[in-house]
Structures are given as C-alpha cells and as structure tokens.
Amino acid sequence: MIGSKVYSLDIVDSTNEFARALIGTAPEGTVVLARQQTCGKGRFGKTWYSPEEGLWMSVILRPRNMSLITIATGVAVCDALVRCGVFPSIKWPNDILLNGKKIGGILTEIVDSTVIVGIGLNLNMQSFPVELSEIASSVYLETKKVLKKKTVYDDVCTQLDYYYAMLEQNRIQELLKKWRYYAAVLGQEVIIEMGDKQMTGTALDINENGALIVNLADGRTEHVIGGTCRLMKRDMGYGM
Ligand code: BTN
Image 1 (cartoon, rainbow, N blue to C red):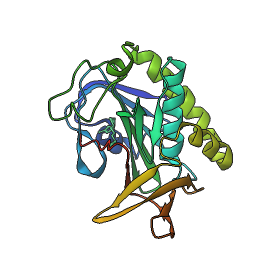
Image 2 (image 1 turned 60 degrees about the horizontal axis):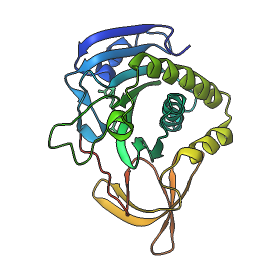
Image 3 (image 1 turned 45 degrees about the vertical axis):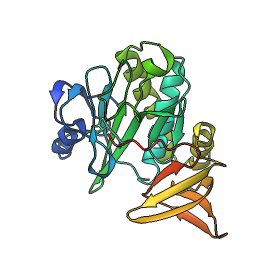
C-alpha cells in the first residue's frame, strides 16, 4: 500500500510541503519523492540539507494510532538500511544514527486526521557544508558503501508497510520490542530538552505512546513526549 501512488519529482522545496497540498485528494500510502529539496524541513523549524545524494521522501497516512508513527517509521528505516548491509541505531525520537553520527531524520506532521511522515536519509554525500560537517554524516562517509537510492527507497516502503500494518493491528508490544533493538539511548545518561526546560537522567524505555521514560537525577520518573534528547557521553545535536 505504501508507494502504490508516487509523485516522483526532480526538485521541490520540501516533499512534506508538496504532500500537504495533496492531503484532500491523495489516497493513503501516497509517496512524494524528490531528487533534491531546496527548502527541506527539519524539526523545530530547522532547514534540512537535501542534495541529490540523499533520499528525501514523504508518505501520507491516516493512522488509527498517531502517537507511534515516528517510532514505526524509525524501525522501518533501520530495517531497510540493514537489508543494505548497514547497521544503524535510533536516537529517540526521530534521529537515525550510524557510528553514533546522525545520518537521517524523520519529520512527522499532523494535519487534521492525516499524518505526513517525512524521511530524510543522507546516503552518498562525500562531504557536508562546513557548518554541518561536525554534526552530520552519511552512509558513505561512515561505511564507504555507495547505496542505490532506488533500493533503499523500495526497502523503506516495504518495511514501512509492514510496521504500519503492525500499528494498525494494535500489535504495539511487538513494535516496541523491535524499536528497543535499534535504540541508542536506553540505559544511557541523557539530556532532555523541551522548549526552554532541560532535564538530565537515565533513559529507561519507551511507553505505548512513544514517550521516553526517563529516571531523573532527583529520583522522579518522567514520561517525555515531544522534546529532543542528547546523549550525555556524546552530543549529536543536528542543527541542519
Ligand atoms: C529532523 O531530524 O529534524 C527531521 C528531518 C526530516 C527531513 C525530511 S527530508 C524529506 C522530508 N521533507 C522535508 O522537508 N523534511 C523531511
């Protein structure tokens, strides 16, 4: 179902924005794919560097359970990379890491009862603009493997189909188990940022709403939704 209708574009501002304009008419599972984005969007209004060496796509979904869409997508993306011989991890909630460096991200936007899931993967970039070179990486830079975009795209669609069905069938524990397998943060000391609020503690797990369960330094337990998380050992904040 995912990718049964595809808008394959050359250059677009943002695949998420293009998808937004289709919401009224597009069937569920419609994909917007672009070779390049001129104004790719990251979380919190950041821009997302999107040259032709990466995979930039958005999927239109109408899920029963919106809270776990980013979690399901993260697992699907990781599975797709594993199929290509690359072994990533997930930094809650939406970062895809390789060797601890950010190589991808997911931007989930809710418009009424529709969700636009934007997926960005830095595949074959050999370098980044200087302001990003400290924080961004690509599959190529981390592994020296050149991946075929079409292969990764097909695998992402296949795996997202699989985990989306799991979500729709309410097989939440199965999904969370898979997510834990890829999780980079569990058992780690983390800094959580929610707006201007900051907390430190140990990331314990995620719950059935996708919230990160953190044991705070003062002994309280917090269920965090909607913030960002940095690993204390290594700050991989990604200001793209
Ligand atoms: C993040 O980590 O901040 C999320 C980045 C998401 C980027 C992707 S690229 C395809 C889709 N279109 C966009 O404009 N953004 C997402």
